[in-house]
Amino acid sequence: EAASLGATAILTAAGKFLPQWGVNFLALGALLAMATTVNAMILMGAREIFAWSSDKLIPDIFMRVHPKYKTPEATIFLIALLSIIGVLFSADLEKYALMVVFGLMVIQLLGAFAVFRMPKAAPNIFAEAGIRFSPLWRWVTWIGCLVVFTGIFIFGFLADYATGLVFLGIWFISILYWNLRKNYLKKQGIQISE
Image (cartoon, rainbow, N blue to C red; front, side):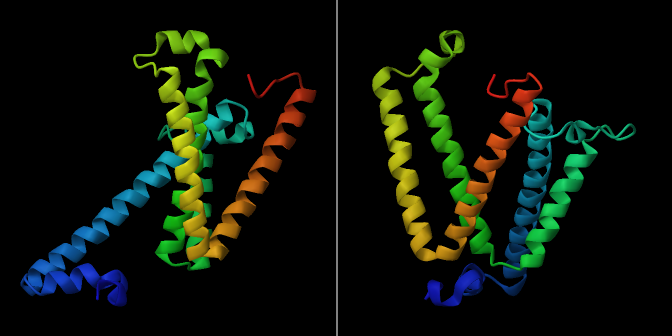
């Protein structure tokens, strides 16, 4: 029954045991929760782009800070522009959520791979870490994330192949950009991988 109602199922269910003002309060709470989440994502994205710029992953313009407000103005503008583009596509919230899940799974997979490789790739950091996984747990984490990501991607792709294709396209463009940026900086004597 909830599946047939769709996004308003929680409000319909709440209406069966709450007075109307309670249902309205629940709806307002849901809207505020979404607004605060979107706000946090915009601010987090701006800070991440700022950090990418300081690491030379993207051009230096994104490190520019507003003299009065001390905020990374170029990155906030970029995030706002990307948000507006996202709204103009008018996709369902489920499509955006699926795209975010795909992206988070890639981040988790890369994080698990970093943990797996850390003892050899960065022994100093591994030695100073508060938590050091044993070789068994590093393997379990890496393989577990690989299996979970693959499963989620397959189910997500089967549920909405168009969103899956858009995600793969963004991933392909990102990898292409990474290689182009790496080669560009290499000509200037900067090793981006370091």
